[in-house]
Image 1 (cartoon, rainbow, N blue to C red):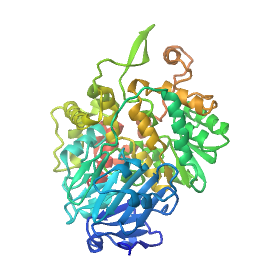
Image 2 (spheres, rainbow, N blue to C red; image 1 turned 60 degrees about the vertical axis):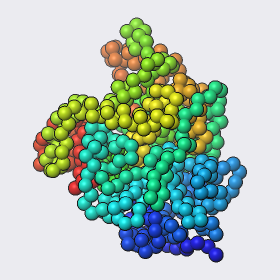
Image 3 (cartoon, rainbow, N blue to C red; image 1 turned 90 degrees about the vertical axis):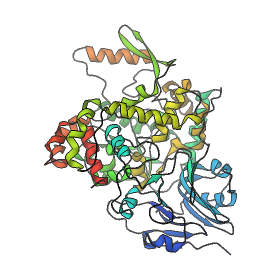
Length: 568
């Protein structure tokens, strides 16, 4: 006899501002669930002895995607993208339900992908993130039995008028990212990085721990990238790729031959678009340019919900272009730069003929907070006057800070301390801080909510490569070597910012382009935000009656506008 009963329904219509895909649950029975939500909002509702979960996902039933299982042991939901280990052919929920042992996380450690798992065995219920917490899971104890789910806007409604968390609001405004386990609301928290949730406790696994090893890191990376892409090559429908001119997304073209549509955000005559177009042509894919317009920074309702109130909507570059993305399955190269190329590490440099040339060598004495504070989004040119300028938008909320930079530095220092047990060096601590807080993951959250999206970089083997490869080998050159091993065509068309294989030559060319007349500079990969903001008069759209706000940098004004969506 099976525990509980799953109920399948036709695809429900999502409300405006709500996610198309959602997991929502309660540590309680079906009555506790329906006290908060209508079952008709979900494709499936499954009830165990200790937990009831609703799932809305049009991909339910697609191989390696969201799945629900029940047996004599209990119930299980795996939500997102997940692969069972080795040659095991089973849906991920059935496999996890069969192999999970209460008090032992070995089965969860072997599950591969970007997922949330809810598993109940013998009445013991557990909610678990993947090792990188690539999906947020929010929870509250303010509604009765502990309630959890993937859509923060749902909880904002259920909690009525929740009190803002001042520290989180200040982090959001001054850094663009809410750190740690906080949310914008005091009564709502999120499951920790590499963590889990139980009926009355919260904890952390130890699946994501640095353990550097020697080896041929480029060759290992090439093999693992091949396998990671191949694992995700069988999805249905018309396949698209968000393609930049950089290294990352082009790897997927080499490993997934059925991609027919490539999309690049940028001015049609830009260097970024020109190189991306050549790459798409090289692999026989159509190429569409998504030209910057008002919707690149505007269209708040189609972007801000995906930030979950944790991150500025700035990075949802493609969010306003869904009418031009003609694909069922969508691929991207998100997090390659952090996991594989050490983008946030502190690299040494030396002066050559007056040009600072980055070296493939880490500094001896890294200063994580000083190095990361500006890279992650702190903007000193506006922060000192930010509280005065936006006070009228949030009456009653104390936004004053004596020293905004010191505040953010203290918050980053606390995040470094929170990850200390997982790292072996200050360099790895820097990468871990960024990965724990991932300021760009809502980029893929929007894709995952509107397409069958695949997150290649979070493959278990690639996470293992990141943890086992010494930080001094996680750089652009190692990835370039791996790409050459995967397919010698991949670097035929070089990124605009790195036209030469030798970094010294890249720096010399950048220097020459800045100094010589009649020679244009190497263009940045992304459109200029300040220019776009002014060209499309977004002050008039966002702040028609709030003249004080207009004195801030565009990025901080966008953050303030995002925050109004969450704190009306």
